[in-house]
Image (tube, rainbow, N blue to C red; front, side, top):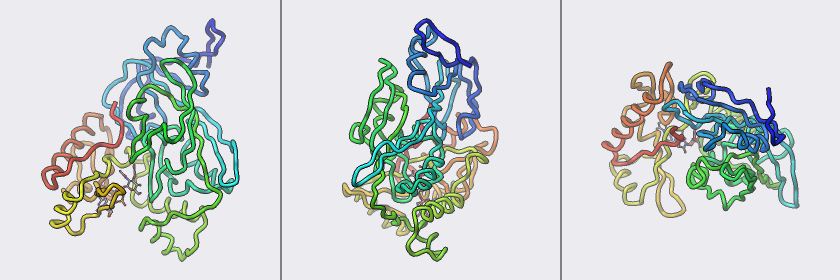
Length: 349
Ligand code: EPU
């Protein structure tokens, strides 16, 4: 239902005291004092004109799949449900495909494949929305979203202006972007445009995916076969948030200098590590947590998942404080055993 204000803009309905449990995949309980759904950029302009707007939203929600809610939210929570997906351009080398920020990420990936425009298949089955993908620069199985990103449109919450950011302006890094830094809480992403190269090459460097294809006897996979392999691997290792509350990887894989890696590898030759372009090494946080004895272990109602220790799961009835407690315990144990500081990946509110 919509109401109208003097400016002539339809203001999305603002609901009071809304339960946010269904809007975060960890299933953590929290209430929003006020809550509204944004379906188009104009909705933000209309909300800004409303006397209720005051200092703007306290939280912008996408799919809520990278979020740890630790408290009730006193202000306005906006849930982004901007829909739509279309081809917006093409040139000799690539297609340009745009999707509304509220589109489900996985459905969007499968749609691009159905349209015969591959390039995102390694990112199949990642929970969340299109608009949330650039915030943490989602990545999996040898591909980061930044490699297929062209630009995005967002509303600046202070000014109400619609702005466009290109790849460089988003300052993408490993599970990071300007939206987690300077622009955190300052913009609402409306739509994202991807650049999908016409010349397709499968990204098969990741052992799990290559093994899955080989097990199916596939030598030259199609994009859909790569997508299906990624889905199979994910389903084996990662809990489905629709069944078991979680926020995906709970910690980033730590990046350490060559000396630290050499010291650790001497004591633990089986430690998985990946050389970075800058000479440093990324370590597998899941392995560090596993070897610290946490895999499948609970602390209160939250545990480290039995098939992938990097994922913390809600065993039922968990609150944000329970998540913080086990996270701190895991960080302390990994630091004590390996001398490596783990940094959480989701956004804490
Ligand atoms: N490992 C263990 N025990 C565990 C978990 C992992 O020994 O409990 C070892 C694995 O055997 C492997 C290594 O650690 O040798 C890495 O594990 P995995 O391949 O499962 O990937 P990851 O580094 O733990 C990252 C991403 C995932 C992404 C996968 C695949 C981060 C923080 N996580 O996990 O992303 O799906 O690679 O590309 O970078 C997410 O961000 O939410 C996410 C799920």
